[in-house]
Length: 403
Image (cartoon, rainbow, N blue to C red; front, side, top):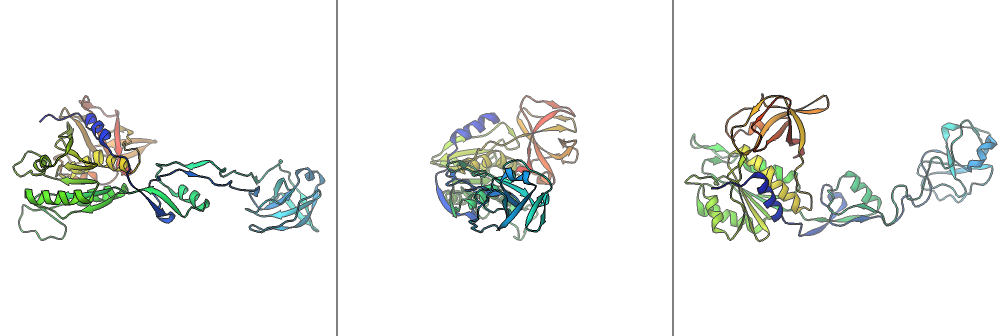
């Protein structure tokens, strides 16, 4: 089998990726980290009227030269005080209160002393000081949040200030997860022979998908039986936008997933990639749905899920699917043994404001070592043309904190 270059496989997936197809309205309290499906436009000015920015006295700026100004009354926040600031008088005005008519400046409480119903000016302020202008926060007609934004705490707060109780968002993609293999046991199952191992893939991939905002349907484990695996895949395909399988994609006699994919009327996006780990990954598209068949080893399935499935989920949610690499400095020499694009787990730290990568405390061996993902970890990308890396070299990394 001819494996395609890593970048070529990403390009093919990008070209095949589906844009969001469904929208739904959710209550504002449920909108955090959902992806906005329509622009949020201000329908009024905020503030709508000149407003006090702190506790003080509303005055005419020209009256500062008087040295003392008569206090006309109070203007608490939320009151509808109709008294007017005229020459020689002031109104005590509090944070958030509308500025009284005629007042053009607010002098803070700390800058005056009160004597016999007057304020005595201790320190002057400039014209218009401490007065929030109309539209300071936002202006009517201003686009405040663009469609395609992943809503954060500030977005939620702004929409609340606009009196938006429900918001239109893109529907979450549904990801189905199916782990295969006669050797694997689910958590809680009783081990009956020494060849059986606990399956972690379904938990890892489910966690990664949920963290991206997807809905997840997890199928029960299936042994190496072609008909049972095919039935499970068809079941998930009828309910999900993306079906992710682990195991059964290599060249063994019991690797049935790759054979089942040939039975589907599917368009192949990739049949294998010049990649370590995960060269036997297979991705097909059936209509507007995807099946992503990953290797069975835990480290392999985790890395390939991050590289291929997470961008697919993000695209379906209306987000940019490109993974963001950071720059880091190697603390060790590294020699590559293959002519593939490789991703290696390293311990990530920050020294003197720079990201540093250390391979010394990570185990070497097969792609089954999921413990290499424990702690502060980044995946170091080593491209095909890079044969040997030296201590101090700059490398591209995927920070696992981002997932």
